[in-house]
Every structure is written in structure tokens, then in C-alpha cells.
Length: 89
Image (cartoon, helix red, strand yellow):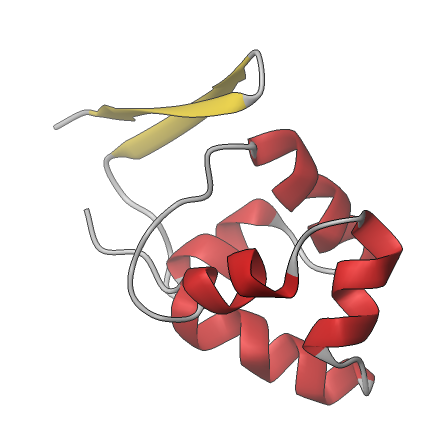
């Protein structure tokens, strides 16, 4: 499944006037981790942290992970601190 966190996170930060360093300090996450998220398509292991970042940036998990395209045939749920993704037809 294609995700867009690596493209959407920098755009959202820029729109809010927030730097990676500021986000790092706010959520006690190493800057290196945040830059890793922007290096290529991936989903962070700690989905609860990502949800908190989404709330701070006033966006949703859908928007930050899957761009602004509608999601068809995909459902996800939070299990512990990880995201589980189901594919449906």
C-alpha cells in the first residue's frame, strides 16, 4: 500500500510554521526519527504518537498517511500502539 507521510508531514509542518526541531521537542521524538519518516514511504511503529502529531497539526491519520485522495477498499484500526491495515474488495 502506498503511503504519503514522507510528502505530507513536511507540507503540514510548513503550513503551520513548525520546524522538525520544534515537533521533536514537543513530542520528545528524536529529530532523526522525524527525518526518517520523511525519507520515504513508511508508517511509523508508534501510531498513537502519529495520532497525537495529527491532532497537533489539525489533520487526520487518513490525510497524513494517504494524501487527500479518498480511500477505497482499505480499512485500518489501532491495535496497541501499532496500526493494522486490512484490504477489502
